[in-house]
Image 1 (cartoon, rainbow, N blue to C red):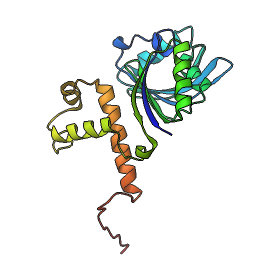
Image 2 (cartoon, rainbow, N blue to C red):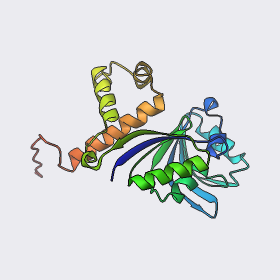
Image 3 (tube, rainbow, N blue to C red):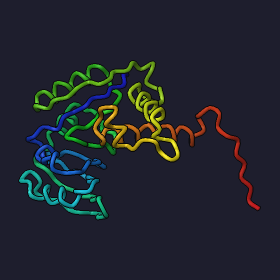
Length: 220
């Protein structure tokens, strides 16, 4: 089955699309989500300087009848909410496409990465179009190549970050400047690098990386 990456734009009539994203400094990590009888239940982490304000804005939405704050910290809120307009989630669920959690929503867009057969990808596209959801297919990768550690886009960004000194000590470039130079949203740049770091570190720790250092540990 091919590996697919899609960028989905959250429609303005969806609960999360009603937020004025240009007014808030925040991104969203969806920790769990399900839709039953047209009502979505979402466990959500709000991250950013305006997390508290975003939380209150969500409470004021007619399409969010209940919202409970589960954890509260500086620039971070973890909430569980119900919504009557789970438009994107419903379309994905009706297509039978499993969502890997957590996933992030930033700047009104989410990235869906999954492996699925061509007929299911077509069904997903139809479901999204029926719901009025705009999307873009960024990558379709044949099954034979799906085991690559990083996607081409992730590898490109990693090389750019290294070349420009993001991983130097001390750093020669900040995340904001790196994103600006590469014409990326800061949230997109941060999330992509986080995915790169996660995959590389997990691969290293699992023992699958070549040239692992031979480290012996003694208890004296």
